[in-house]
Length: 256
Image (tube, rainbow, N blue to C red; front, top):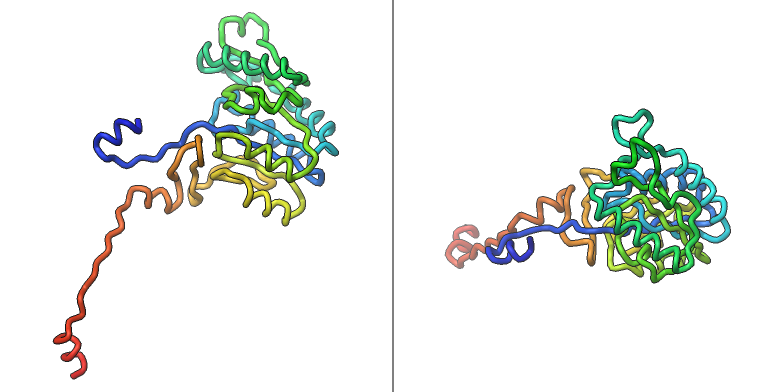
């Protein structure tokens, strides 16, 4: 796309991949955070650039957070839209599922522990599709594909961290910079994190929702340019400067 645009000097904006971090501080509302992480990761079976893809949770509340997250993940029914109660549908292609399984396997091999899911669901209505269980994996290596690549499927890694500073450092140790989330009752901590996180969008104590009046777009490998807001119009608007000389004769007439 970029090469085609360059040939004719066309303007473009690129909204590309994401690996959005989700930070949970030790004073966060754990129930609300777990609910937002579950929805943010598993909607559309995890196939969204803006989905929650990495959780960094303070060690003091990590066990409680994972328990609540697992409870929510295990309530989600995987199946075709024709099946009663379906929440998660199939992945778009077989290749996508194969890649997600390979990324998960590498994360497990690196030391990650599967807390829930991790397999293809079985059943007459499921065997013919590219389905995968909603999966929670705890503490894979930070160099594993679950941390360094975009995982375009229903697998959510959770890492324990020693505090907000480590969470921010881990969150920024990624080539992507689309969205990010922070959960804390401390407004100063939230403001500090929002300023330090290298992403185009940050939600504080809020589920991921886009607002038409706010600019949306990423940094680094997540693209450039903005959608929504007046910034989206400015991306494709030329500003023109006009200079008018104020001549001596005109000035004399004005003085009378």
